[in-house]
Image (tube, rainbow, N blue to C red):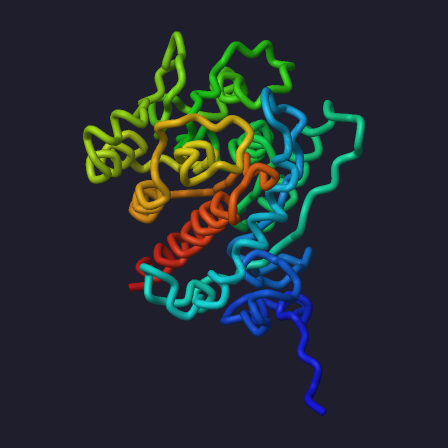
Length: 325
């Protein structure tokens, strides 16, 4: 009789050494579905990056279902965990450099959507108090607003690197629960500095850019990936930056599983190439939002989201590696 194996996500308690190293000991089609097989733990002292989920989608304006996004992204990450020793195209194991934990999902009380901001902000404050980098899965895009509140409280006004089909600066009276208006509110509250912020992949109308540098999807197609990367670097400069990725930035051919799909977006390769080139930027956090698996096909949306999140971890690991040299 062989010894019964356990999922690596279950088999570790906490200490920093247990948050690092290869953990894909379970076969890819079974076991606990933590992100990249990282240990589930709420004891995050000593962690570098903490993953958490915000299963909230009550601010959507079209198709709901993004509350199931965190679960889908974790499930889609298992193959990436399996090849962590040679993460492509980085060719190193990010978990040899970073201690990463999966905190699990935040609980929301059903029937009280007005409590969402307070609940998410408190969650983020708790994690940021441990000096970790947050990697957060939505949920609809409104969840970025309370995340920005907590990050700006810690770091000051932030540069926003915003991948999306929509500008998300529609009119906002300060109380609106809407995934299309929260960045105007964040701007007015001083959480972000539009002069140092960029929006990539946009293909929706706005009467005003509010000072953001907007690189629409046609602009990216016409000018190319290299020019897009250089423009992001130029605008953001040395400011601390928060990266938010609405999966509908991708064309529906690459991300059908989302609530507000818009034709004419970036490909997965284009988006990944841009994100992988942000190593010169001081990224203090990231979220990936609007994955709605009920509309997905063959998990392609969730796989794209998981890969973007995986590459953010690799990017942070690369920054730490090069800082040592």
